[in-house]
Image (cartoon, rainbow, N blue to C red; front, side, top):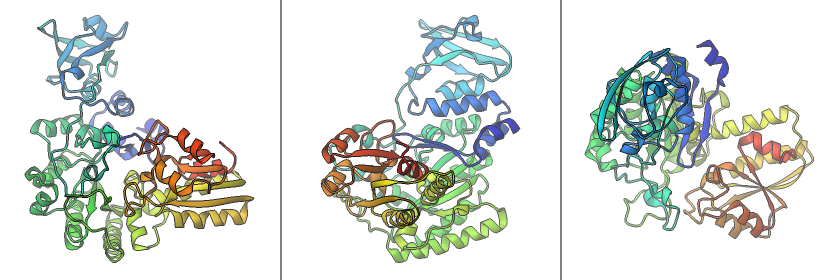
Amino acid sequence: MDTINKAISPKYIGIVCERAPLSFSVDALKGILYRRESAFYAFYLTFYKLFTIIYFVMDKQARIVKKVARGSVAKAAGIKAGDEILSLGGYPFVDDADLAFYEGDAQVDITFLRDGKEYSLTIEKEEDEPLGIEMNQSDYIIPCKNDCMFCFVRQLPKGMRKTLYVKDDDYRMSFAMGSYVTLSNLTREDLDRIKRLSLSPLYISVHCFTPELKQKICKNPQSAKLFDYLHELAAAHIIMHTQIVMMEGINDGEELMKTITELAKLYPYVKTVAVVPVGLTKHREGLTPLSPISPENARRTIKAVEEFNAKMLESYKEPFAFCSDEMYLIGDVPLPPYESYGAFEQIENGVGLVADFFDCAQFALQEGVSPKGEFSAITGMSFAPLLEKFCRELEEKYPVKIEVCPVRNDFFGETVTVSGLVTGGDIIKQYKGKLKKNVIIPKTMLREFSGVFLDEVTLCELEKTLDVRVHVAEGGDGFIRILGGER
């Protein structure tokens, strides 16, 4: 355990993928180790998360052996490429998580199919020695069976890339990528597998406690069973991070606080809850009428959540309940200090992003990075006032000129104000001929692992059309380093 503690950042480890974030805390990794006392399993599980992010399977393809390593115990046992693994450790084989869990054993029972004939064998090896099996991958994703009244996918305009219209509700993606799921489509086998393999932490959308209201929100009778599932998972020591998408007049006020109170009863296994305001685009024709969260409601909510969290802090010495940064910006309430966010386990849900940005920026400045030159900084409407204030402070101390350029979201609608949903087309329409030669945009505006905006405008097209050089900043540290000449 000490080795792993030293090897991992005390804050959090995270990457962001096109579909959702992968983030897991040191505490979560410790939990995996305690559940399965095998360092090999823990590290294999880490790489399972990192490198099989989008390859989750419930079909035959995932059970087919792609490659068997030379000199491996699997090779010696006679396993071949093309074999279909049916079971491992006495349980049906689903995907690489099964392989990661069971191949740490000194004795592995395996059943496989070859040329229509079933074979079973037991492989004996050193504990934690890998089998040497690489499986085929598949892009099958467990689809969502809900019809939530606030579903963002249903609010997307037509003509976007097809992957954005996929409504997933896959517990495997929740474990591996940190995406939020409702658990409404879980089978008994799924629940048993989560507990058996200790797939932890999970990220779960709760929204409300009252079963009747949950059915109304999700339009799925199965959704009313959520708290039964949460209790069962907590009893199995599965760590859960939860979210509540708050809607004006629907699951706010008393219902919100009742939900948070019920979640707190499952602490420390329900480790955090984030309250985020509903996101509404202008593309809501034929959908349930919803109103944006009002500033007054945002302020009431922040006060109630902070008071509840203060009691949890007093009892458990760790923060539990948070409002997202956007809630504070809507209510025009000062954001909490950096220390309020604990291990930043909800950062990919917009909780603590602002505090983290400015903390990382200050750290870069303390390291001696000196901003200089002239820049235009592109951002969303909600973050613009905070960035403007920070940039004016920089200009007072350094030979730098920064023009903050907030982008009105015409693509999704003016109610969408976050930077991550700004499109290239809106930047071009609003700022063509108005920018400095060096332009900074946040990495969150682009599809992960590519230079493409949500509206398919590429980074190259943006630079060519605007006749500028665009620099992509990752967080506050990246922002300062670009200002300092690290391009």
